[in-house]
Image (cartoon, rainbow, N blue to C red):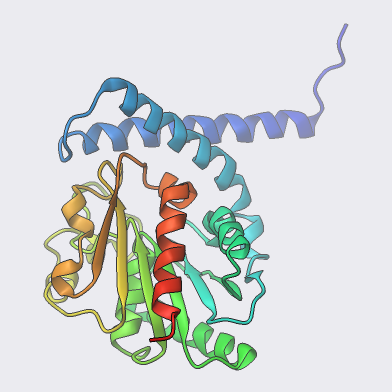
Length: 272
């Protein structure tokens, strides 16, 4: 007879089960809501996108606790420092794959910034400012490139327009709800009101020009931030790039996205 499972094994299986169930619920709800705000597409494409999103959630989320303690430095280099800024309910663990692609392209040094995603944008702008100051002091650089996902893009644009004016070489947002999210359910934290479509925070910034070279890259079928026009920023002086069909987290694991980001950084850093 096989030996009984140990307490540790039972706990591990329980954690995996809870993560799997939570992920399935997240995917079912988010993709169902998304379909009302995006163009229809063949069922096989829809299913493939869901499977990819499931895979990336399952391999990334177990790393989140670890990256509260590690990942501040994600790569070396002698160029303009790059700071990764995560989104809602996440931390810098989301950028482990993208950081590897940047290292392969000799972009760096690379840093990951953690912040309390549940509080308002303003105090997180202050936290980002202090982090940028420490990175600049350590590297001797007077400017940084910001690469942000989701909510992180709102934090970065606010920083670039206020206390970070002149400090930001490029600002890249990935899947950021520049016009707000359509979700009408509860959003944990005081940042919730600032993320909502037609909320005062985003309406006041709707026509504000970007203050640094800015790229917004987003998906045609993002299961969290939709429709695609929500992420467009070209009317404010930025550049928009749409990626076909990727899920919200999957954007950070897309070779196409990585190629666009690397080229944008290289172009902006190229001597005139």
